[in-house]
Length: 196
Image (cartoon, rainbow, N blue to C red; front, side):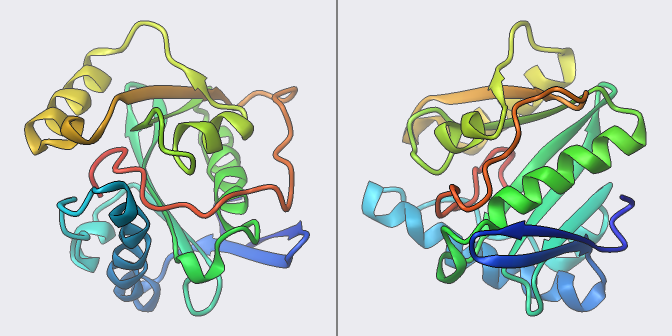
């Protein structure tokens, strides 16, 4: 699943997840900005600006769902793991399995790359953050690696902690993990997991 394109069936239909091309990358800031609007009712109005396409192009992998792009996942390599740096779904396509399809593809890409886990950082109490990931097999991480501690410190420097408790989560890539439940996903704004 180097993600030339994988299909995932959900209650909302079939979702194609693939590696982003240049045209896809150009659409990501608008998707992220739309997803950020989900935070406004929570009083969170000062998240960092969406990353430009040029910055996303330097990522280890960027996966996208839909044409035009309905959601995306930005992946990096951190301490031998794959780190989900950003997951954003356009709210117009929320609750249709887009986020779950991106998470399943992320785990598949990580497994194929030889990583034994996928990590992320997110808000503990925002419904489409930590609770969403927990439903897809992520659990709070134990002791943090040096690189994950550095990412948390960077988030604190950006002021993300002022909006709520941040949590590092991890999911194994080995077979036998809880299966993602198609069609039971929630609208998902960017986790600011890693500031997007």
